[in-house]
Length: 408
Image (cartoon, rainbow, N blue to C red; front, side, top):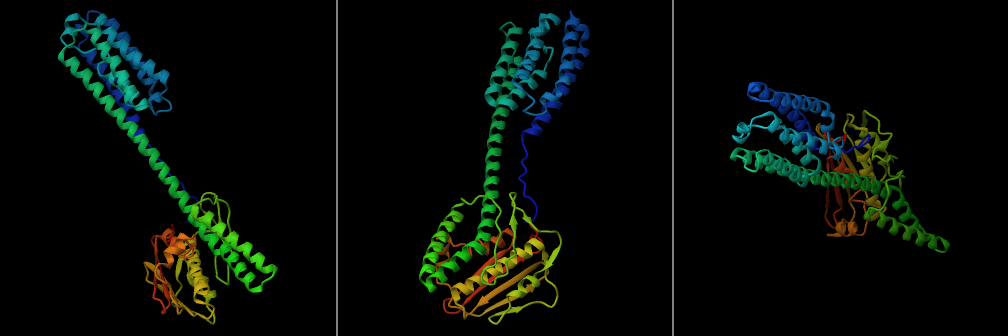
C-alpha cells in the first residue's frame, strides 16, 4: 500500500445543522409574511413590527452560530431561546385577546421550534426536553392558563420531536465514536501485521540462524546461540501481542532470499514505493539455482511496484520455509502465470510435507512465517494464499494477486 493511509471521518450531525440553518431562515420569513397578511387585525402593530425586525436581524446574524456544534455555544443557546420566549410573551401586547384565545399564532410562530432543535442538536434529548418545556410554559402563560387544543397539540409536537431528534443525535455520536475506534484498531492491526512480516523476514530468521549455528559450533558460540534463541522468543511474543511500536523497520534478506528492503513510515506507507509497474520476473529470477527451478512466461509480468515487492517477499518467505523445514537437500519449483486479470505464483517442494495442525500450532507459538509473511501479505494485496500439503509428498503454496486490487 503506497502513500499514507488516512481515516476519513464524516459527521452525521453536519447535515442536521445545515437543515436547522435553512429552517430558521424559512420560518423567520414565514413569521414576517404571516404578520403582513393580517397586519390590519393587530391593534398594536408597532410591537409586532419591532419584534419581527429584531427576529429577522437576529436570525440572519446568527447563521454562523448554527453551522455546527462547536459554534453553537451554551450562551448563544440561552440568548436564542430568550428571543423565542420574548416573542411569545409579547404577543398579547400586539394582538387581541380574542384571537389569542381562539388559538391564533404567536409572533415568532413556528420559529421557536428552531431554537428548541438547536438545544437538541447541541446537548441531546435532555437539553431538548428543558428547552421545549420552557417554550410550553410560555405558551400556557400567554393563553392565561387555558390553552386551546391546537396550542396543546403544537406544544406537544415540538416537545416530542425535539426529544426524539436529541436522542437520535446522541446515538449517532456514540456510533461515530465506535466506528472511529474500530477504524483506528484496524489501522493499528494492519501496521502491526506489516511490521511483523518485516521482522519475520529479517530479524527473527537471523536470530534463528545464530541459534542453530551456535548449537552446532559449541563453546562460547553455543552460549551466544542460546541468548539469540531467548531474544527470538521474546521478539515473537512482542510481535504476536501487538506491543511493537510503529517505528522504522528494514527487512534484511536471510539465507539468500530476495526480500525488498522497505522502510515503513509512521503512516503505514513505504519509502521507495514509486508509481508505475515492475516486472515480477526480475524479482523472482534470483531465486533460481541448482535446487530451485524457475518457470516464467515469455512476456513481462507487470504489477504495481508495491504489489510486486510484496508478492516477491511472500515467495521468499515460502522458500525460506522450504529450506528450514524440508531440509537443504529439498528441491523447489517456482511457476509464474499471468492470466490478465490476476497473477498466480506457485511454489512447490518435494519435502516431507506439513503435519496436520502444525500451522495452527505455529501461529499460536507466535511463528509468523505462513500467517503473516505469506497469507498476511496476500490479504493486504486483495489476493489469496492457498497452502496444500500432504505428508510425504511435499507442499504447494499458490499465491493469487488480482490486478484490480494489487495497488492497494
